[in-house]
Length: 186
Image (cartoon, rainbow, N blue to C red; front, side):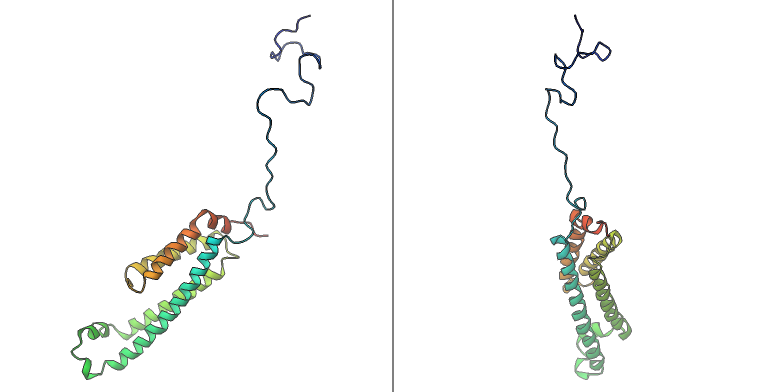
């Protein structure tokens, strides 16, 4: 008795045990099936802060410290400048007069801006453990603005801010930073 082509789905079925594989038995050709991939608890979400993200947080605290030190030194310079404006010995000093030509209000505004920028950096540094993707985007914008301000108006003293800003933007904007700030919070 002939059954025809065994691969024909419309032909007569063969009885188990002769030429067809048994029910539940895998065909004898091809690659074996891979075992199922098991996800770690949490679906691969980082449970601890990655080193690069933690480094970015430390760099933010360094910026906070530098901002406060710079604000104090600049405030002392403004106070000293106001006392030296009436000094007759500095009447011929062109570098002093170039700095003294700025209004006192503008110089105090720079001090206030430095303190506010440091406070903003401190707030962002505290949001690393609880913040979401919005904090990540804010951190990247903060870091880029810090780098630009470190490059243009404050070239000599802003070089450290330039480097820290670029590193923070890279660490937070990378794949590990994205995974950390987009993790589910229970």
